[in-house]
Length: 397
Image (cartoon, rainbow, N blue to C red; front, side, top):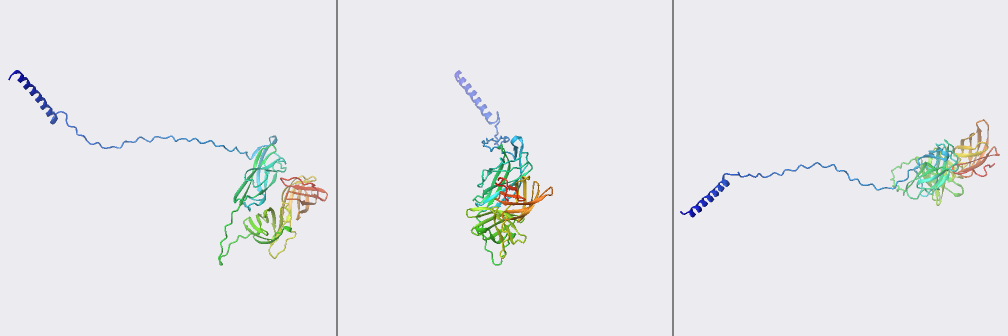
């Protein structure tokens, strides 16, 4: 073998050796075979929920109602203005009134401040429903701790539901204080009464005003009347399509009447036996009634003197209070006491002073707000309610 052949042989041997070594590594030696274990899907641990700051939504700016004037305030010269409601003298809250019914709302209010209310003070409409009332009415002279009766003429709305109006006092310096409200209910269409079977006995709430009456109100011809009393509330009808709505307090029934386009107030007193009543409409016009088979009471009409007045008389100017039960009445004034009887629009009686002197007096009711008259025949003695003024002339023999 020549040199060239030996070199080729050697190269072959080397290459063969390398091949065998490589084969041995891949079959049994060298790096061991890696066994791949299938992976298991492990749920990832979720991060804690972050504390989310709530989205703050800007609140739109809303125009606010001006702060309401408080029940008290500062009056002329720095005195304290304050008023306290005492009582509803007419039309208590939630009284049922017919749609469009005219009525007079009267409050009794106490002057709980240090200012003296004079005739420059007013009760003015504040908010709610004005019910056809004026923008304001005058208030009578009322000293601190004194009481005043304040009246406004109103008309019930035609829409069924509860209606509320609020009125406030205004001082001579235009400061607003106090609060008085009127709340009435206008009924909707009545629910038809189911027909009763022959064996059914209806349950009726019987009050002294309940039932049928024969009435007399003079030339206006009020004729027959049918009333229903439920608790203190009385409703009914009278001849010619008239409507009655009122409230009972003791023997007295006050409220409103309405017929056609006319309306006004009623003030009636029941007799002890419950068979007759006497009184008035619009404070001065006679209106009385009786059960079938009875006769009219005599006198039929008695005017309304009951309540608070401001008296003008010789040496006794000031507050006058009258309690009336039908014809009879009693009361107090700045100099003493009074008592007497009423026939129509005329009240006659006796005054008694604290010094033990006494004498007669006679008053004549002009309207629901004023009367004139005399004491002992020659001395003037007249009076007027809050919101009105002294009549002229004051003296009437």
